[in-house]
Amino acid sequence: MQSRSAFIISDRTGLTAEALCHSLLSQFPKINFKIETLPFVDTPAKARDTVEKINSTIQIDGSRPLVFATLVDDDIRTLISSSSAVFFDLFDTFIDPLEKELEVESSHSVGKSHGVMDVAQYSARIGAVNYALSTDDGLETSHYGGADVVVVGVSRSGKTPTCLYLSLQFGIYAANYPLTSTELDHTSLPESLSAYGDKVFGLTIDPFRLQQIRQERYPGESYAAAKNCQYEVAQAEAMYRACNIPFVNTTKMSVEEIGAHILHRAGLKRKF
Amino acid sequence: MQSRSAFIISDRTGLTAEALCHSLLSQFPKINFKIETLPFVDTPAKARDTVEKINSTIQIDGSRPLVFATLVDDDIRTLISSSSAVFFDLFDTFIDPLEKELEVESSHSVGKSHGVMDVAQYSARIGAVNYALSTDDGLETSHYGGADVVVVGVSRSGKTPTCLYLSLQFGIYAANYPLTSTELDHTSLPESLSAYGDKVFGLTIDPFRLQQIRQERYPGESYAAAKNCQYEVAQAEAMYRACNIPFVNTTKMSVEEIGAHILHRAGLKRKF
Image (tube, rainbow over all chains, first blue to last red; front, side, top):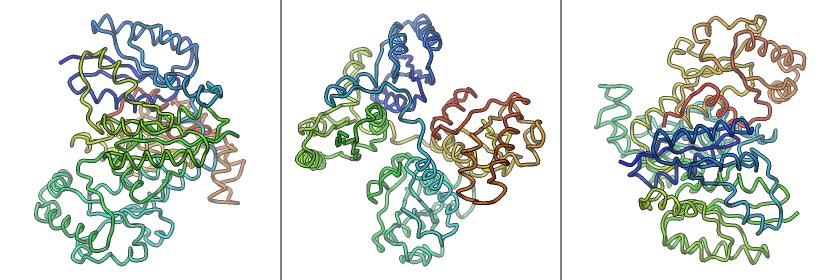
């Protein structure tokens, strides 16, 4: 298996470069990448140290590392691009054509994307996180009037991480409600949800995967038995269909994917 | 002020394209961008609808919208690029030179980056989120042995969102502990933290900003008074210095930036 070093270099957090780099490299599954992120490379001295680190990798690996960079400062970019690596400039590649199209010079300022938020945005985000925490797992159903979405599902179908993700990343007010075994005996919406039917979004999961997850935490308990998992999932899906609740199967999805599906299908927009 | 429409188009979540697009457009602060994300454009029919939507914007705006795309499927990319928009292919721009450098063809498969995680990764992530929830705000200090980092700070300095972010996005076991007024009367580490000094990371904040945040929730209370905020922040910083605790000022930072600083300075790596 071919092996390659890759560096993600940024003058700020490196999050944007990481996201694109992982997307790109995942298209080469036959190569074993050793990826290192070097954030906050924001002075010429740090840039020179970074170049030294990159160049020393060539001695060890016997091949040129890949460098994925989002660097706004021209001097630092020039320094980094002077290394012997294969240099992919994720940012500057598009800035030139954008300047031409928009007929405006770019501001060349660092850290606008994951940087300072204004006070209103900060409050919106913290408000959403506090809402998700205070309405987690069926708490405070009386506050559902303030929800953008109420995520429902059987225990361990992924509700809590999904709601925390929606609140943190998008400022969405996301409550979550666990469907209990008594509620699952009927296909009608539980009473505490009945007034909020248009906000309810269901999660479902492969019963075998659910069993695995539950067994990990509660081995041997009837809660984690195959038969119970199958019953609960079948009943939850029957309820979603009977009540016209949109739902998504989380079995093969990351939290990011579940979140994107909910936003897309519920027509919700990010708040910041 | 010049105004421009921009579309972010992806065959999956669109998160990668969103991150890079926001980075790029933030470099043009004098232009008012109307940005819309269109995720899950994964069939030719959806691609044709999208092209129609883009082209109709030209009629309304009187200018060509910008399109930022991460599309893996060649047919769908060809369809989208046939629109009259200014097309920036965030993904394909780099795939060709990568194929040449690596001397391997890319797999052209969709959704590898925010897609399916393996079971071990999923468990690591959920484990970290559950850990952050169960050790939030000074709960279960007896579990600090399992922490990667223990975030400390005065009330409302940003501990909870930071720890949830670190757990969700990086699988880091992040506990958080609020410094109480009694503890702030000394510059020694609180007793429940004394065994974990090497894992402690401090948050601090501008006292005026702290006052704003506290006033919003508890107007008029002495907890939110300027004098109290100033005292608490000064004492917390004195403790960090006396105990050699690394710390970061969160006043002008987003949660992403705070998280990146903690990972970087504490030498922590993402777990997935």
